[in-house]
Image (cartoon, rainbow, N blue to C red):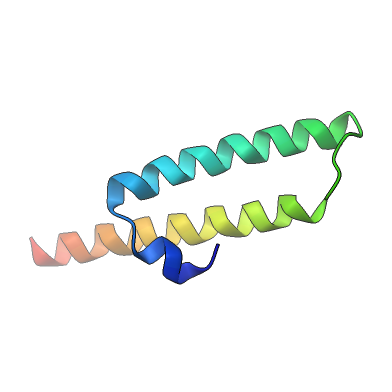
Amino acid sequence: MAIKDFKELSLSELNKKLADLKDELFHLRFQLAINQLENPMRINAVKKDIARVKTLIRETEIKDSKNA
């Protein structure tokens, strides 16, 4: 997903997306371990999506703390 797609989500939706991505990464790593992974580049894409979501969550936290 692109960063602009993630920016449209609320904080709770970002947290849910983060949990989903971590779950997907777990399953991808499991498939890699048992040699059933069809697209190994998907692991890198999921890792980058996780980083994007974490960055947006942190930005939101900083923005909220400055406004408080």
